[in-house]
Image 1 (spheres, rainbow, N blue to C red):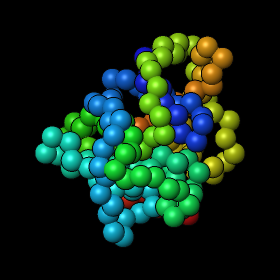
Image 2 (cartoon, rainbow, N blue to C red):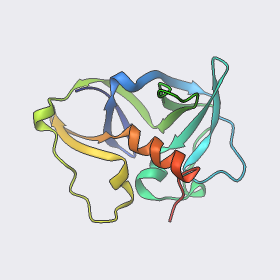
Image 3 (tube, helix red, strand yellow):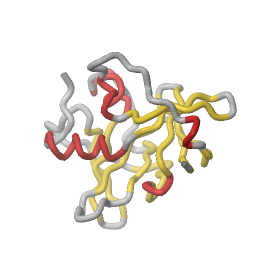
Image 4 (cartoon, rainbow, N blue to C red):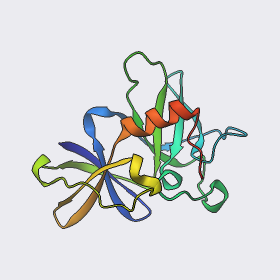
Length: 154
């Protein structure tokens, strides 16, 4: 798998590079009143409204008010629109990384406790160049988001 790496909470993550449309290193994000905590806000990408999800909250169940970001200098990974959908999503990140080659043979299933908040969005872990990458399953995040009308925290 060729992945794009990034940092969130000083941990390494990777997503399949084929799903990535754009890396936004600085953008303006508009908050959405009454949105679930997992929705950081929305942004405009070439005339399209893109919902930006807060990965810190998705991974740890933290509340929006526990996390401070500058909504005018935020960084995010924007994903391609999925077939049959006009909607686009992005993940708020702390720091973009580089391309990383992850051999499918070394990807292991994550050993998370049953019911862990992040079970739905981590599909594997792999060690590459002495760094442990948690591999994000963007399909699961988007499917859960769409089914629930927004990902709610418990």
